[in-house]
Image (cartoon, rainbow, N blue to C red):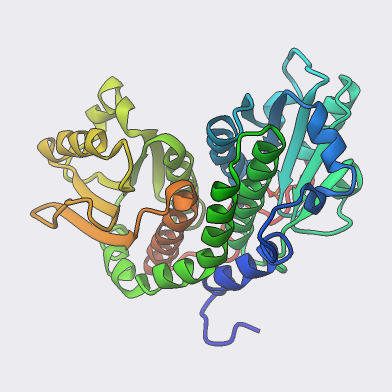
Length: 366
Ligand code: M6R
């Protein structure tokens, strides 16, 4: 079943181009997007909403956090992503016009299911679940649905489920933007073409694996690591940190790079590797000065950069070029090297990659 791979996690990382093709296929076949990919009632539901509330746990929460950037910036609709287990226990202000989106690989996560029932009990009727398991409890409890087609995910660390959730959420953003008159037909065509090209781009990023495996050797003896990203790449930094913690047991934390000087910079020394996500976007120059601050304190930098960022390899600064700037889709491409880094760090440490200690694939208890 594993073929040439050593673990399910590695296999599932490499299945991502195929998983994305399968997930996107129906949506991007033509030259126009249809809200019907979310269910036949979707057009009617989307016409009534004035906000989006995303509820999920763990890696699925990180996908939702990226989508919050997309939905506000592209579709112009207020959106927040919230950890499902917190939402269900806080006193919130229900907005019956909000679309409640639950995200889950398994569709059986107890906290996410309970958050959905809580939302419904508060009067939320517009519910959508984006899920990898058809007929799971979450899908059955939601009015609208979109099934990611990642295929069974065996490794406890979620990989292909995450990138396919992001693809689904980008489709959701575009469909809502279109319905709200925020998407020109030129942009619609441009994004459809970008989505069609995405699996091949991911495939290309996967060829960085040997270089990343070499970097990972230098993480194995470390106690801590810091992950930095800005804007919509901050949740990707969170995802990179979660992956490293989960399977290599190295303590990792993510920060939006601008927060460094508000505290975490105090931690930085030569024993603290700092992983930075450096897309070639409007925040690049700001990020570069954040990175200089790290270097000035002796921190060892591992930078996953876009092409043409002019961040050079130098003493204590290791740079791998990941991709051309993929615009809004960039978080999907920048996830791949972080998955590979944590996988290879775990290999170095000899942990049980597919079944890390204390964790279950599907968290069906609170
Ligand atoms: O099946 P779900 O997407 O609802 O699972 C949510 C989390 O338990 C899950 O993403 C967890 O954080 C993963 N082990 C992360 O790799």
